[in-house]
Image (cartoon, rainbow, N blue to C red):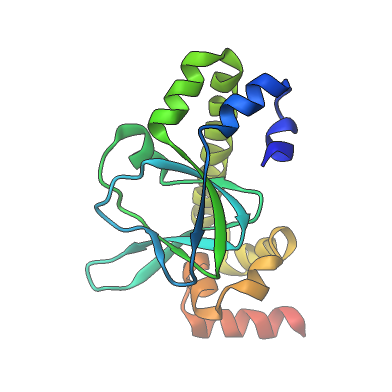
Length: 187
């Protein structure tokens, strides 16, 4: 995590040590929930090892995948985290995983302690916003085949770690449509 933070911030030892004192390591088993719908998201998470998927549950009980999160990524339900409101998302581990988590109150302590952490918060917020924006544009403006090709190009790890059913949901299509796209693309 320190290396990732240092890629966009310059921290001295005192700043890092203060941050490190606020962090907690959490182990999450495959299929265990990190967050369930209607719970408040109180933690900013960094994936040290493993993977997670964020999904919505429709009134009919269908899971609609929103985002996947893998090693060296920050994530949370940012809306719930910022507003301290119940989440509309479920976040579940797709494999045995290790997280480094920072409670919202501890993050606020960091912000008050040193302006460098305000910059950190801004950069994390920018990345989360850009991911959500990109995801929205893909769903609105690209064909299913284009979304599939982009996913193959930019996130090939997903095809090794996530089921075809969940990939289809993420792409906004049925599994049968994904099978047809895969056949067309590989021919």
